[in-house]
Length: 105
Image (tube, rainbow, N blue to C red; front, top):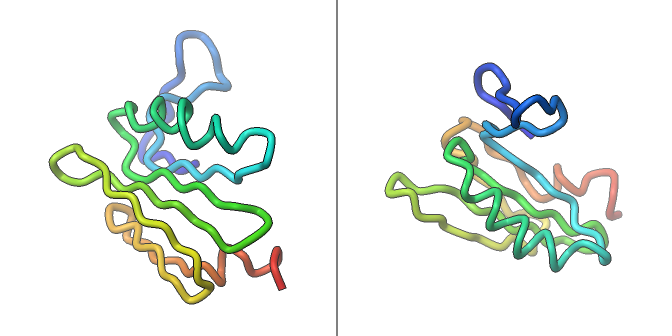
């Protein structure tokens, strides 16, 4: 998770941040369906969120959702090692090779 500015918490809880700019989730077989559906819908409803990234742990698969200026979301899937994720609002580019550097050989 990346937060720009001071973290804002949900109520009195200190373990639930409501103003992330970037969230990255690593998919697992037991939570993949939930992460791609209900959790993704909740995350995309956060006004501060600009990027939501899902990363498979057993193959090269990255789903990158990026908020457009209009508030709509553009979703791109990356399934090749040389693929580049552009996180424009954060000024960051990262390749699938970098993400999977120590995981898949």
